[in-house]
Image (cartoon, rainbow, N blue to C red):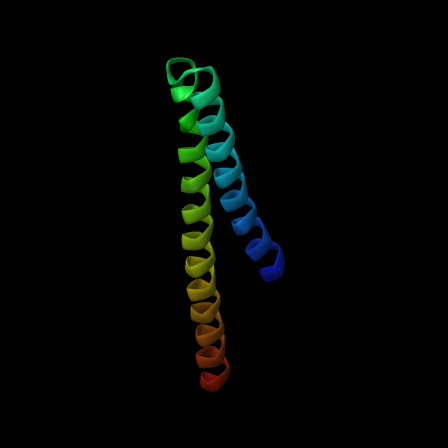
Length: 77
């Protein structure tokens, strides 16, 4: 699962870079008045990248906490 989460976080980064490139190119060729609103998709993809990173760290901390609690419980028995 760790590998999948790592790949998906960089998937969102790739989507952000791709959408930024496409929107910028189309903005220069067809006019930014028409394409500027599509930068929202880039912002959402960047947000998903950072959300994924934050959730991965949070999950690792929670798993470590649960493992520690299980060890404490086993020592008390």
